[in-house]
Image 1 (tube, one colour):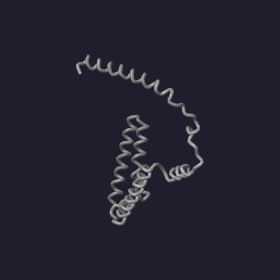
Image 2 (image 1 turned 180 degrees about the vertical axis):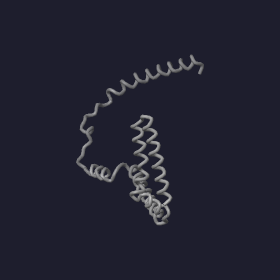
Image 3 (image 1 turned 135 degrees about the horizontal axis):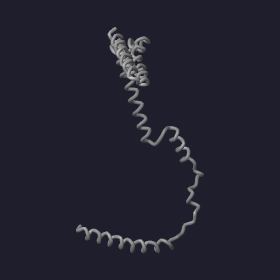
Image 4 (image 1 turned 90 degrees about the vertical axis):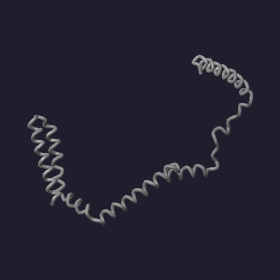
Length: 146
């Protein structure tokens, strides 16, 4: 009974503010305020407010909300574990099927090896350039007194 009275008063006050806003030639804002102010009285007329009031004072309803909370917590925990394992069950099954195939050949397995001929030639050049880089860095540090 009190909730219905409060909702009616809020709606009446909102409609009063909408009338004042329309008087100031702000019609779009006035219509928006009127729409918001009609929501509480609409909730009272549909019975939602009475249902909420009955639910708020019902221990069975609060126990139901607790059970829903535990269910949500369990669901979110399983989702977090699933993400850590690497995807959904469908993705894991597809990966297991791919790993189970023994006829698959790696793409690089058929390519011929290049041998050792080119690698020693590139390493000394990289080492000599590396020495130059450190000397430049040392010069910069000495210049700044570090």
